[in-house]
Length: 133
Image (cartoon, rainbow, N blue to C red; front, side):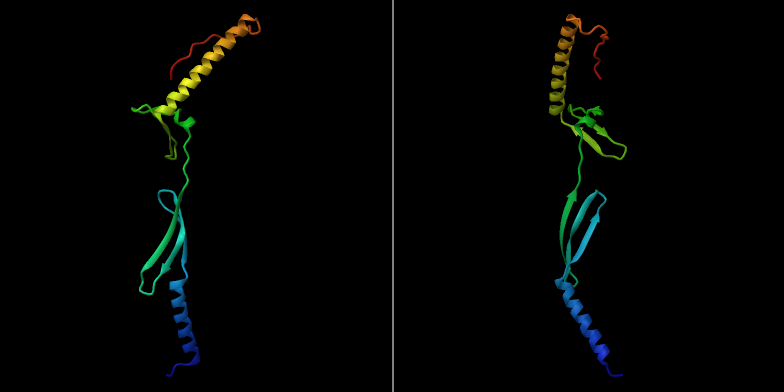
């Protein structure tokens, strides 16, 4: 059976598409097991080898406020792990600076309350002692 015009046209179209495939990239877009988002292009060569260009993005979230609700570590830093496995941390230096600032604010507040009590503005102050966590 001799090739017809339709067979020749189909063969030619397939050859053109095969050639274009090595010039036109394939888009990829996925999220891996480490929660990194990948987007990029892959070129397929005529020899079956591929060239991939990939942009990797990862969303991170760290709350020092949540970290201080967690547990201290041996190096003085603090860490809190959420139910979903995300860990929030604060360094020992930042934790010490926060505690120092909080202590200064608390001391200033106590002085202000004493002055208000001495002036007779506050009559119903409840006395309490601060306890270390």
